Amino acid sequence: MFIVGIVIGIQFMVASAEDKAKVKEALVPYVIGCAVIFGAFTIWSMVVNVMQKTF
Image 1 (spheres, helix red, strand yellow):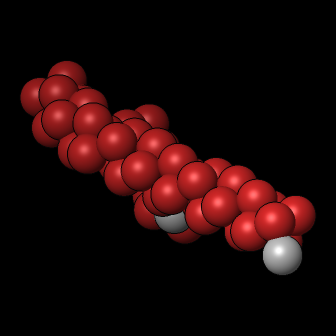
Image 2 (cartoon, one colour):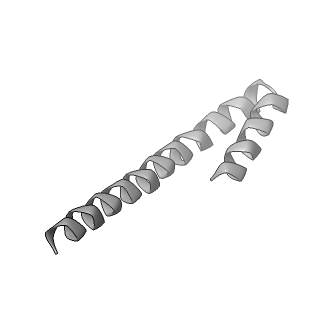
Image 3 (tube, rainbow, N blue to C red):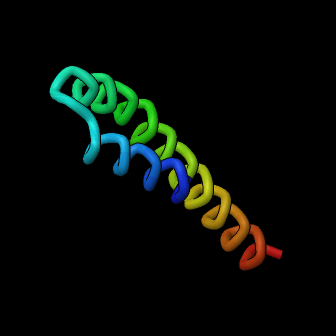
């Protein structure tokens, strides 16, 4: 995710006006994907902590 973020950032910095719009469109799925991955990790870690306290 970190490398993809860097690539998207570099593309945004060197892009023309039309290409910046395309990069912004690619940014939306990237941000949603990051939120899903971090959210899934958070839910998983909470479940593991609850199960360890239970047993």
